[in-house]
Image (cartoon, rainbow, N blue to C red; front, side, top):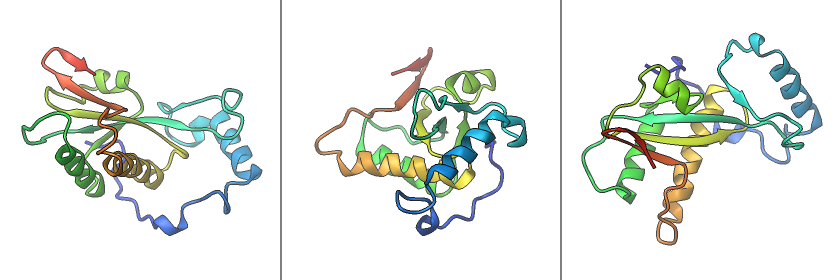
Length: 159
């Protein structure tokens, strides 16, 4: 089961970009929120401290993709299937690999994508994962390194 049970109603055109919504007050509010994480109702989120990244705070997530058909790893086809799962909200979101292990959230053959999101909201998390996969698909002919991906092997997590 996903940590995020409500399907987000997001409009990619209304997401913040460099010219709208991401001014200093946005970051100040984000910093104040992270100082009071109990108000967010999400205590397991990991946020890089603003001192480490003076421009903005980011959140790290792991997305687990299960029930993928047996096929070569890595492959463009696999990226496409994971993208389809993101768009269908058919994946589980965790705050860290430790959280995945703590809740037995992955099994042999699953894929885990680790990525960052600019905000701890449902729509931004899913949109960020979609963007990472689309970027890797776009540059597949030049870079097949599958950065950020982990394949769950028979004896645990294998890069």
